[in-house]
Length: 617
Image: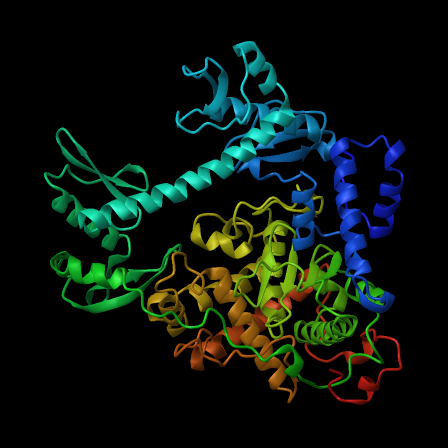
């Protein structure tokens, strides 16, 4: 396949320069042109012809600039929905896949597979019809006869079928169908809400509906028939729906002292004890049935949620104390060579001075992390598969930083990214272990945006910690020592949820959220890891606030990090786990001594006034 696969910006420019006489496919040339435009825009907007380009190393793909250019160039692939085109046999052929299905046929090129998918989706979702008013043929959605998709009309059935044979026209119709469906859904929701308000009827809980039929009222949960008897009135159906809504959010658990009512953590297998003191589980269940309305009010309570993230030290105030890690400003080439990252990106709004400060602080923080783990700096790039971005990949949300599983890239925002590097690096390590173990896909392929990455259905199915929700699945190819360390860490973090303050605090923070975040295994692991890293650095009388800070701060009035005895137990588990991980990242060699082999670590070129300070930051 002639896609852009792990190409540097110079190679990319050469490809684009040769486009007129190139033998590459049309989509390949379009992607190359789009990303060449991204490089020109990013480089030309840096002031004073700066030396630090916005993109270093290999092209990552998927950034805001990449997404905008793809939409402008007509290469937007949202019409594919959950379907993906995956290379087979090293790119010799391509197959169309979704999460559970795939096309048996294989195609010689990406373009051929894309065209076949467009025709197939058009056949499944669209149908021609003749309008009785003017006897002209049009195209509508198959399941909704009133949703006309085509803007054109045709005189005969043959003409409209010839139109649908064109894959390009099928893609345009599918994109328009998405737009019209979203618009119709929004209007329908507004009309349903207005009709309920006009009639003065209380609404059904979210996800529940009722339909009046000949034999009574039938309940539906998320569009499917609910496991509930037929009701004789709307009020009875409403009560049953509220009971089902409550039981989705509260459950009965057995404790050594009797029964208890626990609150289910959304999107998780865990729960937090809400009310205990019952003699048995039957007594707890009877109490729940008698107080359904009270529990429904609790479940639908919209109390003000605390801040969505830990308040970190601002980037400008992040300080470092400890041995100097550099002899001068970190040069881009030295940064890539020392740590071995696949690629590094900067946002458009990062000035040259800010880019240099980010490189310096990232250099120091990563060196500190390598010292804590006892690994060479290059091991932090996880076999050169990890990328780093600074304010280049946000979407306007509230997260200070995030890890993208598809592209294997850590993004730190400009305003709140300081202190998140250790947390996000552990997410990257979790994903790396998932790939190494065979639990997640390790095939790095070309994605729709032209960058390279991994096909990831969900974080739970991409991380090594994701197997915790599957107790019978064992992916442990790393040896007994690593397996024992991982099991110890698992038990310390997630093995005693009902008696763990760390888990109970996380579950409390997830109240009111549609999906669990704080209580997810991968998030609890990452927070425990950054707490251990900060404690390890502070134990030596140092600090590295760009790497990690804020692990003793609260979110509202709840602390989301381990405290007291739990924090000490987790620190011991992480020391054991870090030793085994260091051996794995060193390809089986003995790990270095934890924390300070600074004399062996590479330094940036001399000449910086920062080199004379202890922190270098």
